Image 1 (cartoon, rainbow, N blue to C red):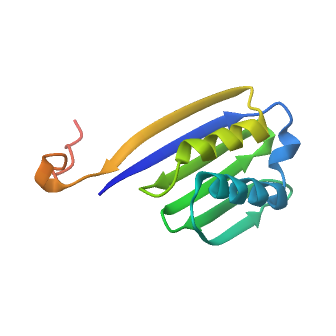
Image 2 (image 1 turned 135 degrees about the vertical axis):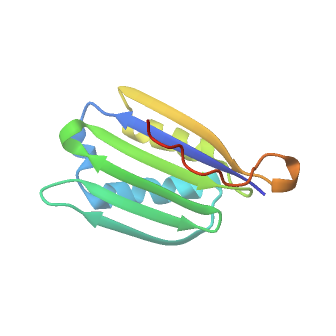
Image 3 (image 1 turned 90 degrees about the vertical axis):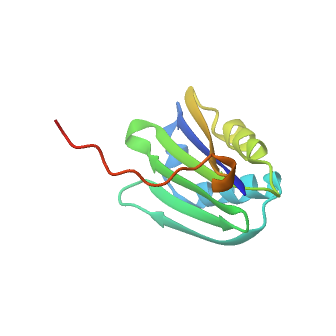
Length: 128
């Protein structure tokens, strides 16, 4: 089975949108819904004085967010496989947060060892 891992880094002009759990939970739940994911559970934590970490567990894996409003920055992860559209989730998050800068890293993970995509573990390189 192949998996997709999208790491979405974004910086916003109005950092107040990143400060509280309520709006971030609503954002990720709606992003999951719009992507077609099946939500299983979610948990969000409010930091003092501000900042959020949260995860939405979905049947297809998870969506998570970590915010640092003092830097106007949020890190979003979407780890998925079949049965949902992660691009729809990212598009909704982008539409709602309106980043001034962003970086998207889209990785293919998994696959089958028989296909030659995976190899046996190698010992770590010895520091010079």
